[in-house]
Image (cartoon, rainbow, N blue to C red):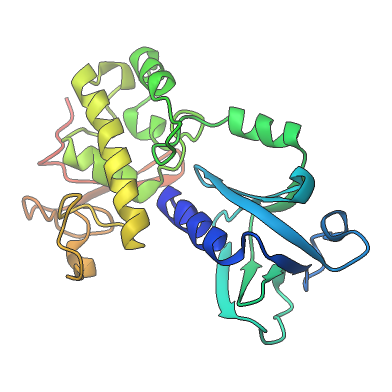
Length: 265
């Protein structure tokens, strides 16, 4: 499932390509009803694109909003306009004067009211990539919660946008075992979790991929090999100590960690 940096980058790219233009909106698959957007015609003007955690909101004229959540299988495809005929699996096509965006396989793609949008966002924790993020609720939750820190970081109602890769890498960088009780994480480490999340996800937006091994200010233009981009996630050996990487299942998701760098107990 795409993590927060992917969604925020998509918001920036789609906003730059599509906002302010009349878009031809269709659903080749037939599972999205565009008529409330386009009325009697076949186009509507996009006003802005917002990202919150793993959710995207396309805001059109009169505040009409399309909510998209990619889930496990959703993907965007960008092509020049006019586009080729769409595949039958395209849920939503946004065709602008120069760029066309096709959406396939999302978990959610639906019109939402302002009330529905607010209710959805209200269920999410603070998003480290948003300028209006308030980490206070995140700090308060960890301070009182007895769930493992590895569970808390994947809970979108606690912190929005963190997925399995960033969880593994953040905990490794802070030498925290995923099973440590959230309320037992020292306050300075809690602050560092938030700071790392902010820095790493912002770097992910710029780079278009997850890189956790060269700091936030690695030289631009020098591509980091995939084998050197993470410390433990889906690796056989830890990039830090070269010891074996451990794996176990936690709440139906595979956890990656280095037992040497992240001792438990």
